[in-house]
Amino acid sequence: MKTITLINGDGIGPEISGAVVKIIDAAGLKINWDVQTAGADVIETEGSPLPDRVIESIKKNKIALKAPVTTPIGKGFRSVNVQLRKTLDLYANLRPCKNLPGIETKFDNVDIVVVRENTEDLYAGIERQVDSDTAESIKVITRKASERIAKFAFEYAVKNNRKEVCVVTKANIMKLSDGLFLETYRNVAKNYPQIKNREILVDNLCMQLVQNPSQFDVLVLPNLYGDIVSDLCAGLIGGLGVAQGANIGVDYAVFEPVHGSAPDIKGKNIANPTALLLSAIEMLKYIGESSFADKIEAALFKTLEAGIKTPDLNGSATTEEFADAIISNL
Image (cartoon, rainbow, N blue to C red; front, side, top):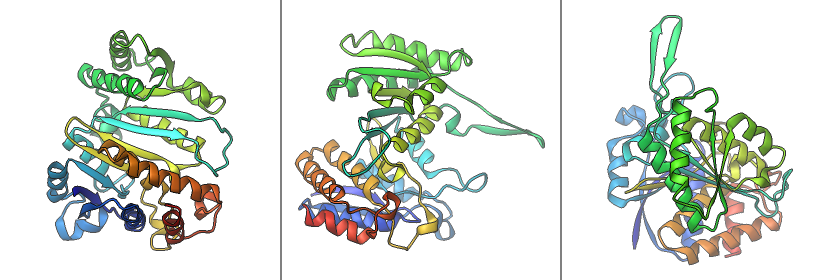
């Protein structure tokens, strides 16, 4: 029996993780869940939102499924997500964005994979207070990190029969940092002649994504642009409630939804578990349980096609009702 770390998060995290575990169990896949708590709820008792035991659990089990954890805005502790990525060197953030059945959107032909560098850039949070009126953030781009994320994107394209990898930068202005990311991408692209390569500036990309998203296939971006663009792409397919994600390194992988912990609806039994379930499906494929992944995905799609949806998707089903409907369709 496979042991997988389950970080059940805070806010709506315990509700949606409970629903997803219930669905996987009902599918007949036996997993030993190593449940770990993290986030705001454990600071008072353990002094940290990310206790060492969580890291130790992931290092032992290699794979984790993570529900959302609250990150305070403008003050308080740093993002648990960022700490996990840096500590475990989860250098690749993978966010597939594809239309789901039964969810009406402005575009019905979206199938984009966002590959985001996950360890450096402005998003790494290297900051200092220069004086009382000035704060400074440092943008770090290295050849090593740029090269391995470019290779990850091209390898993903090859393995998943994708046609093109498009690099996204602002190299016309940040000629050294984004310039290095672009230069490295160009060098890596030479080793994959079977995959089309393309270059675009991030502002132009955002405009084109909301006009004609079907022109894009795989996008590879530095950290901060990747964070913003992946949320834009999530909006194209129905919102953060259906947007999956994975953070992958050489030794470890953490699968999690894109959305936050939504403390405003905590305990109301209306949270949408779809994004976490899609992340879990991606995790099952990653660990070689594709038959179970396909089975659960088909049940999810059948449920959505039947119009059974949570309030964020203009439905009326509770979290539990939605999960039970998927189980009945297994």
